[in-house]
Length: 582
Ligand code: FDA
Image 1 (cartoon, protein in one colour):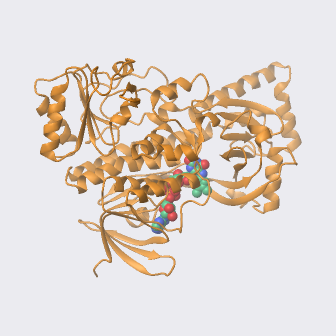
Image 2 (cartoon, helix red, strand yellow; image 1 turned 90 degrees about the vertical axis):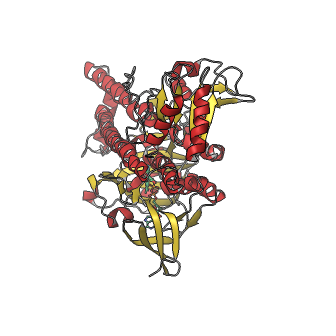
């Protein structure tokens, strides 16, 4: 039978990955339809840590301001506190996400954007508005029930949950953004490495005014260390949803022992115990149980179908990489789909999505799993062990402060265990340094610079092809402008400096010939953007008359260290290579 609806791209799912995809495709002017099962966006806080790369995606979309308006700013994110309860003893603290003096400069130097804490139920409406404002076609209460593909496209059956009516949609490409239980992955034969259901957690979203216990040590995560279990640490992590009155209380449980008691009385008692002040009123808003998985798709592309977000990779929330990786997947794939559909790139460009994003997914899953394991030394140093009574556990904790060599050794072990948390909470290299090797990057034959510091903890800017363009503030006509701002917005960019005008002329010719948007900037005195601080010269790794070719997703496609004999031929070769054009 004839389809009821035809489109170029069918996006399934409107979580962070699908909404970002819908907004980005609309920005590119792609004909796309997004269907999603539920009647609205996320109804609970879920993921919340939003890193600089993700905020850069919002900046590219022109919605950074709207996001920051409703997010908790970086300045209020920083105190990671370990305590027996809010009202009782603080055991340890770590300043996180670049908020501490040791790391603040690193984060400031790395990006024009700052990290923020924005719970998913607050972020998703902003993304939805952005998608709709750009003309995206989004359909709620519309569930994908069946999908198949052939050489030319996909055929999907969707069911409207209001009235049960079914509709057939034919699309040239399919994006599965349908989360950890992806129907797209199941029905189109995607397979996964790793395991599901490793551990289980409960989220309790509640209101409780904890201003008295948190305003002087503002943070996102408060780890309440109480004896009785060694799951992660103690018996409850408080995640700030709205300073300082709305929270998620997250606790782990052992599914082998059945589901935890989720009755309001039991949850209020658990909350009260970890607050430590019976005068605080608690109002439970919603609860959910969820699983910890460790899975990555063996391929992110099968024919005309792609997986983005949790559909492709599932991992624990340690390092807060869930929504970040999901949105960044979409930022990688959206421009490629647009360019192929608009006839500006060869089909093979789409293979680079798997080549570039699957290694990132694998790293993210791996890092999150190690970070979970790295929390156990804290419980151990506190003296907590499974099967202890509360009294035994508290006695073991108080022994930490004895004037004995053994206690001193335990205190040292605790310090080390807290410092190890930097790999979860100040892992700037993990957050920022995703580097690509694929057919959509033309290597210049140079080796990647050796890291000067720990590559997981520290960002290492480089313009090596495949790296994200380094950020430097430039002096503009009215305001400072980031190098990142000169790129993106759907276009390729050519960046050069004094003596580089032949690159600009070449870019203009190539753009006209191939029908491509190529933005050009000469960063030099007398031009619109000037490197008055010298920061860009220090970062760019090329001479004044060299060139960087930057993709729409802010990654360097190619560079020349200086002017060449034939800039037109060389740049054209790089553009054609990047876009899989013959
Ligand atoms: P996501 O799961 O958000 O969205 C999937 C979308 O697909 C939904 O819109 C759904 O309606 C739709 N869909 C599914 N099947 C469909 C079908 N057949 N047809 C049509 N639509 C369909 N992460 C983190 O980093 N820190 C945290 O603290 C938490 N906490 C947390 C708590 C809870 C309760 C959950 C469920 C999850 C988390 N996460 C998390 C994980 C985080 O929420 C997750 O990584 C991101 O939401 C992934 O975004 P996606 O858009 O990929 O999928």
